[in-house]
Length: 200
Image 1 (cartoon, one colour):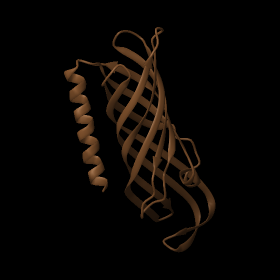
Image 2 (image 1 turned 90 degrees about the vertical axis):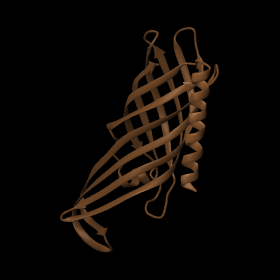
Image 3 (image 1 turned 90 degrees about the horizontal axis):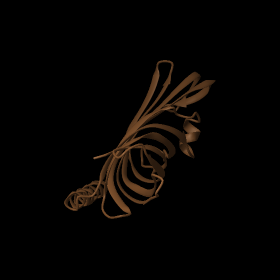
Image 4 (image 1 turned 135 degrees about the vertical axis):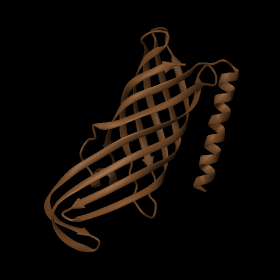
């Protein structure tokens, strides 16, 4: 089922991009620094705010108010837990625990946008795809590692401001809603992004 979703998303984005090029509409490469805050069970696992992340996306205009594209991010969460007794591999172990979470969300996107005369563009849309997780827990000589994929829906709102005809400042907030699987509970989080958009 997940494979079919990827194929459909890829075909849709390819079709949208070809249509945009055929219509000679604008396209944009966005590069940004990304920060994150875990939500729900992600926050229970790592409560600290993440200052480490990057991302990019490509968006092509389909009409006066609609864009389609693809994107990928990388967010890193880390927290050092206090000395306590933790359960590892069904055994109780006392000590300090170090938790790491690397997240790689990848989506196909569809967005609505509205331009203003003052150079602002307001954007709202959503992406669908998957997130690859590398979760590690270190404690003494023990290491628990979980690598897995989760289905992802990622609504986002943002704004750009034109610096010149080809460059814009970019600010956005994205809700990465990842759905649990048999290996990992849901790992959802908010990402706060700041960067640049380049008109192709």
